Image (tube, rainbow, N blue to C red; front, side, top):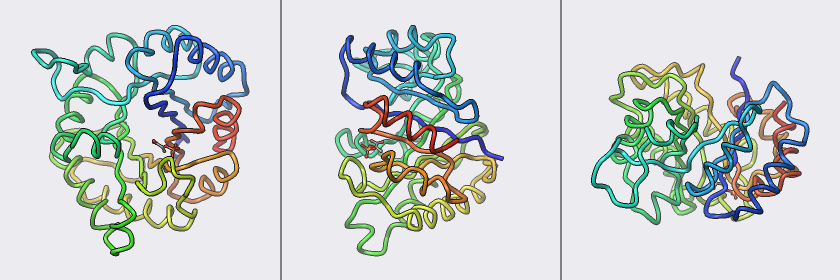
Length: 247
Ligand code: PEP
């Protein structure tokens, strides 16, 4: 039995006051114990989020990390530093990092190794563009991303994969529950063929315009174990409704 996980990717949003307001509203809401919840603010808001979430059931993660643990890497943040601050999670290979920072599968793989070595739980994102889906290449693209990022690691216990079709992120378009389930089943099949990964125990999240109105039908599918939520995670009542739909 895989425990549902709902993680909020706040992207480059927030201020001291909005983080305070959002987290107080979230922590004051109904958080079902069967659903694991994480929020991933920007680096500069991590300490504030960690302080507010300390002693609660809401975990905190980062949206990225370096592939190195220390050194002359200006602007980077090491996974060991995130652990030292108290973070549990890190998102890796988000499509916006792949698109705007030219992150390759090799780099995602190196970041994954460093994150796991430091003790972070990774959420590795994969997903095809609209052009790739229309060309019938969705499975080939996602399969290659999985192989590129996940193969060759000695141990990936605790790995979470997020399927985020690029055409559904921040667009209001959502994969239908059937489209999402089909890809999640494909991903689980691929995971079964990769080294040490326990495919049946690995949680696969769906991400891409998840809202209170579509969450329950997505979560009803066998291979959808929760969600990585962008825009709706910035509105406490919406994020709470999505969390409760996963219960
Ligand atoms: C995301 O960026 O991970 C995401 C799923 O965004 P949104 O929910 O806004 O589509």
